[in-house]
Amino acid sequence: MQFRILKKYKDDILKTFKLAYPVMIGQLGIIMMGVVDSMMVGRLGSVQLAAASLGNSLVFLILILGIGSSAVVTPLIAILIGSKRYSECGIYFRQSLLVNVVLSLLMIVVIFIGINFLGYLNQPQEITKYAVIYMGIVGLSALPLMIYQTYKQFIEGFSIMKPAMIIALLANVINIFGNWILIFGKLGFPALGLAGAAWSTFISRVFMASAMIIYVMKNEKFKDYDVNFHFRGLNLAVIKKIIQLGIPSGFQNFFEVGAFSIAVIMIGWIGANELAAHQIALNLASITFMIVLGISQASSIRVGYAMGERDVKKIRRAGFTAIALGAGIMVFSGITFIVLNHFLPSLYINDQNVIDIASGLLIIAALFQLSDGIQAVGIGVLRGLTDIKVQQLLRLLHIG
Image (cartoon, rainbow, N blue to C red; front, side, top):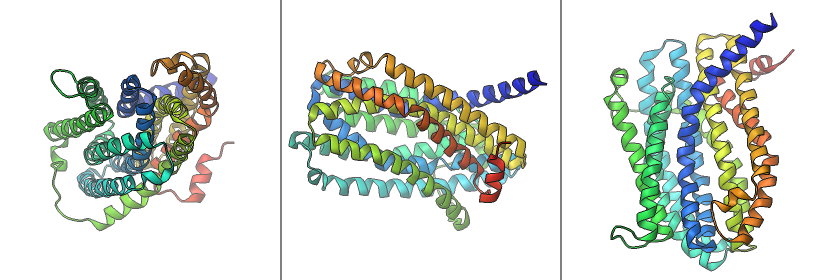
């Protein structure tokens, strides 16, 4: 009996991980652009690295709102598939594309308005000067990023995860090469410094959107869903559902990232070295968080399928398996931060003062890995449940 139970959960773990690992790599691909930018910009000095930290934190604070909102498309599609309502998948795709394009334009406007108030954050003047340029360029990437997210979340609702992973890996190669050319002025291009890193990130995200659109439009599997880049018309009921589920999800991410962004601003009041060290620690913590977001996304899909099938036992198994898997990964991450707390910052910068500060921050980051991972996966499970009432939700999550 015990062996059968163990085998059952082993199968669930393998199914979850099979869905999750391409998403992990794909999510890492998005965050690794910032990590690579930081590593390469760090060679320019602590001021530029601090400016990248400030600019990245504030732009990502806005972008994560859109990324979180777009993520609801995946469980919605999964539920439709689980309940065999295939004809509605194309409707949800087109309406989500409309919502996400409009949202991306609003995010760009907010970023450009915010740039004008950067001087009021009482940051060192030399850092603010570079951050304004960086934010203005990277902010434009909200549009291609949200188009990419729409197509990505749509196909992941069908459990097709690898294309996003491959595209993200290729985008990182483009970003690294673009950084080398534009930051340092190679192959006859002028050395743009931090602005070069920003333009390279923008180009990489345009590539991601273009590659994902081409893949989906050329794939015969999606021909029946009319996935061309156009709008047939408004379906207010579907738009309302996407917004009602997406905006709270986006704001959950917004407030979580907001805490870190406020910390970036406050640390900037101390000095450039401290801000650069914080950027390193935050980069590394972001990597582990993106890994566990892969588990979160997989849990949304598996729970969404089970919801469509109205199978309570499958919902419970999928949810608790994902939470346990996410917790295990984050415990390992925390141990890694503690053991390698001096080595990891040295990958970013040669300044020993910055490395010493960052090594201490990594110990603190290690302490919140487990709680961060559990809540991230838990949100994915809840996203997959979408329409369940509070009473039903409490009953499903009750153990005993």
